[in-house]
Length: 161
Image (cartoon, rainbow, N blue to C red; front, side):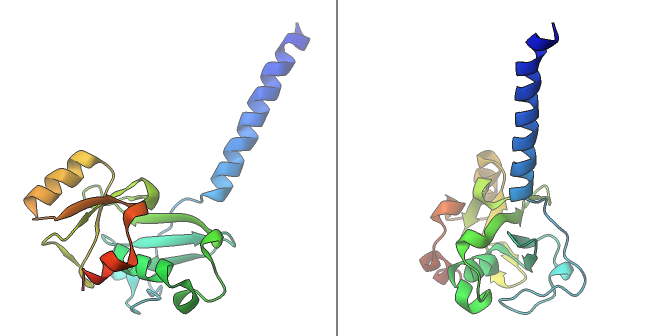
């Protein structure tokens, strides 16, 4: 009887190891400390918890931003804002979901562009976990487009100035 359980136990052990590896690659989002500054604009990020965005690096460090726009400015110009780092060093990117005010993976979010809602640095990309909320927000706040993270570009940032 025990020999019949061995394949099942082996499978469970492998699944457990795989879950640990995934957890190690995507650390949980963090909360900025009082002294954490946005590397793009220099603002103290903890003052704007509703807008916090962050990048977790593979060396365990996390850098915080006072909005999605500044996070993207950094990602699109890493030599300037994160010298010595590359996109391969990024293990997780989190943004604050607008309605829930909780961190969500940027790659899973939808962003409303061109609304009448402004963040700490003015015009901002507004993140949502689901399409229905993004569409309702865009309707209520004159949003021009809804885009996934993969479609956010440097050119788009120029339209937000």
